[in-house]
Length: 114
Image (cartoon, rainbow, N blue to C red; front, side, top):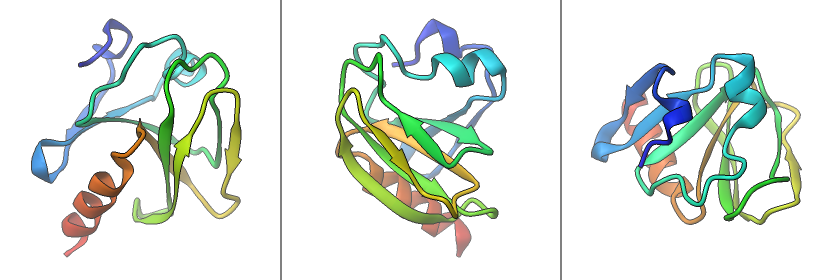
């Protein structure tokens, strides 16, 4: 599932059929996943130049995969429920996935490094 708000954003593919939508615009970063009923198991939203995320306005729990400057995973926070904040000071970007899907994206990212 890809919400209409993401259609004009750049997308990249990872292994295992996973898709990463890159929130490049100020609006896409501001709105993020708020008010969506779901994201989709094979979709993640990447927030470049970001080290914290809030889930205010969210309708579902998410996994947050924090990335280093080369895009490698450095920390995963699983099952972040609505109305929470999570931070990783050393992160340079992050991925938001539906809860339970973060590990699949970590594995796909690590396979891409090999």
